[in-house]
Length: 356
Image (cartoon, rainbow, N blue to C red; front, side, top):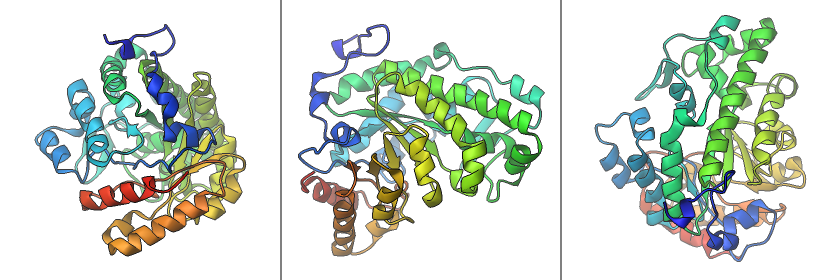
């Protein structure tokens, strides 16, 4: 192993160049020399080099191949020069690793063979141990060495979103079965959320100890619940994940879609940085998250607008971000598959030309 990959027993030795990271500075609420930027789903989808290496390779197979994970994670850093890399994986990968029978079907998403409905179903799901994801440790260690002064963001799916896939058996528009369990079988819901929370925390710990410099907890479907139900049935479990990872001393980003009314609670759950999607004006998000940094939030479709429009709207996001404790520029959700990589190159250069 290189020095960058050696371990201290708790975490990988950090590259000293990370001390100059604009991304990490903004996460800490400091003012870097430029506005830092990275993109959700930047590791693929629209990049021709990504499509080439993924050809004929199933999503979960790619996620479990350290060579492919390393290459795909690095591609957008090479292409765009972004201020952080996001570990290439999928939110259901830890479930696959512990033995849950699931697959990711193209055009559909994660599909679970035997949906969870009883306490016995929950108890049948093993806890995650580091040896179950040794390929992650390998890939993160390599990436820490390759990236040098560019931080690697580890990530996991938040308990509610992952629970929804397990209960529904796949993607859902109304999350009816999920809510039925949440309201009608609170003992099963509690056991399931604790189980998934433990798996998510363990998965993030593996990534940080192998070399990740920050983490993001994705709660893609949290916007499906009301603020009251979020506080009672969702927030405590996300908070437990963030608290456990917080012991490792890395910045914690918490992001959800359609979560405008939940932003204050998402911050209170233990986030250092709260992601704001494009539906909420960034200044409104800032007013709700308290003394925390924010991430976001350009509408992903604006990369299809005329360049001057895209950059004008990006400038507005940057200006609004100056009202926060710290600001990491990002899209308001992931990069769309039809995105022209050249547009993201222009956007990245523009954002990084702006003082922090």
